[in-house]
Image (cartoon, rainbow, N blue to C red; front, side, top):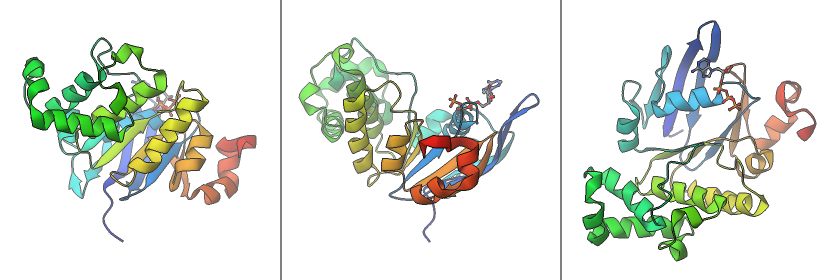
Length: 249
Ligand SMILES: Nc1ncnc2c1ncn2[C@@H]1O[C@H](COP(=O)(O)OP(=O)(O)OP(=O)(O)O)[C@@H](O)[C@H]1O
């Protein structure tokens, strides 16, 4: 089997007496959506924070394309191709959709942000930002003020901003949260097609979305992975049903 795009090995993080992630090893392979599910407080956000570099593990490592990035900070991991979308929006609400996408492209080019105005005239940056908007189904909204987008469109814009980094892997923490049926359906379609460009490690409570999208699911309970498998395998797993899925499966 080819090398995973992203891998965690034996990640451990404790907060005082509480072990929030306990010896977590998982892989993200090219072309897949790997969903991470589990009850509230299971350690999902703590795990994502260690993968992104926001939180240093007590033990274990994170590998991107086989390279150990555990010592690198979030900015260095982002430059290396790890794209994260956030639970709390990082978008500049008064700027247009295109300006937000340009900020992403500009961030990757390493130029200082105060050069946004010249950047609007920079053909290569503009092309990259416009291509990302097109990819996220937002080409028609380039000139729209970001605050005027629907909730779901803002999520699409966050993904467009991440796409300007030309990522090797996505980390997504509850992208469906707060979306209505229409927004969830649009985002599900987008994620479904994105996996071909870069695999997605997806933390998500919306089980309809997880079951529709995931190639593999890992179930985290009290900081430990109790099962990893396909949708069918996870739905049929007695321990998972007891610990988490209950009647929803
Ligand atoms: N900075 C911190 N200091 C102390 N305890 C923390 C800290 N961050 C998280 N925890 C604890 O670690 C455990 C795991 O939390 P985490 O937020 O990772 O879970 P989660 O699976 O993401 O939950 P949710 O689904 O509610 O987002 C929880 O018991 C939480 O209270």
